[in-house]
Amino acid sequence: MRVFLDTSALYALLDRDDANNGKAQKAWNGLLAGGDSALLTTNYIVVECVALIQHRLGLEAARGFHEDLLPIVNIEWVDAEIHRAGVSAFLSASRRRLSLVDCVSFEVMRTLGVKTAFAFDAHFLEQGFRCLP
Image (cartoon, rainbow, N blue to C red; front, side, top):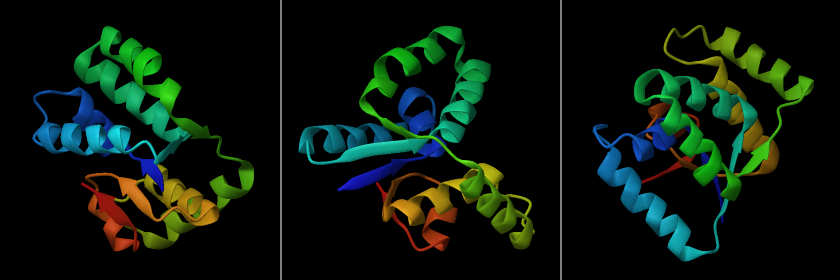
């Protein structure tokens, strides 16, 4: 099974004070233990995560994210076509709390046929994706 990793879950996984940390840890351990999950994200999510982690948890946490977590994740690089589709969806939605990164993530998931997201962001459910946990 391929699983898309969202900022909401990756951050919860790293921040012990996050309300979803326990759920994130349990789901992450299940994904790793199963051994049959291909973990993927985008370069947009990586940038968003690093900015959030560095701001809230510090540079060492950002370093750990890069050195310990990212090596086991496939990173899909967003091309111009996916970016344009994400911008179009973002502008069409006209929703303040829906981000461009979310809209690009949905486009990548649809393009790759990924149906499951490791996410605590309800927008993934709204878009018809299955969320872990």
